[in-house]
Length: 296
View 1: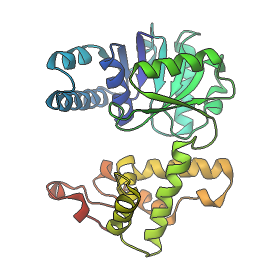
View 2 (view 1 turned 60 degrees about the horizontal axis):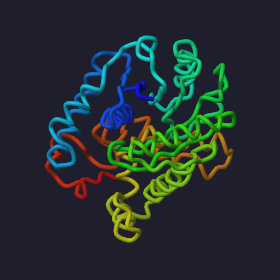
View 3 (view 1 turned 180 degrees about the horizontal axis):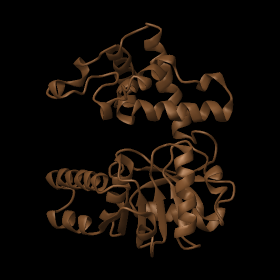
């Protein structure tokens, strides 16, 4: 497990790479373009700078962390001589299954294959793998270097050995692993996403505005972030995708995405990543407090 590969240099992928590298692992960070990889490395460097400024790590530790990461633009070269591969691509079943088929051909037969999916079935992803017992879910929370929880999702065929190995490895990263079963949404998103969706329904029905809904949940329920602000942070497209997975999996209308969420995703209002969601994140508003930026 000294050498690992992470597929995807986006928000979750670069956070996972950062965390493993900080704890001394040699990380192969893989993405389809040099531009994506550079953006991911820039994010890691900035996050390490913040840790240095806060006194959590030294400048030397930052340099060592960055030195532990190498970048690759193709899977075969990126997964050579690694004991663990973590897929952190977009939350799309077809894309993830294609990646896993490539991994089955490119990696060693005993390499553990993990996915950072937040809702997609581990059992389904493992179905096309020659040894499905080595496939497991490692659902990190965002931001990965900061958040302690890792949901460890055991698929129908995941072996005891693989599960125990990943549980112990997560603890060595100073995380708290929690083993859960493979059902749509697992635990975190099965509880969180319907709450976010209900907050959007509350807005959709005109019960209260964005600021008011988030304030009630922050001050009344002691949530560090309101559900609509959190949806923007996660990405409204991701929220919609997870709700759709749960709706398809359970065939229960309570998991159907709110029409307002669907419309916002179709309009490209995805939250922080697009510059606008339930709040305005445009350049002209950057200096303002988010509590004064509600749009709807």
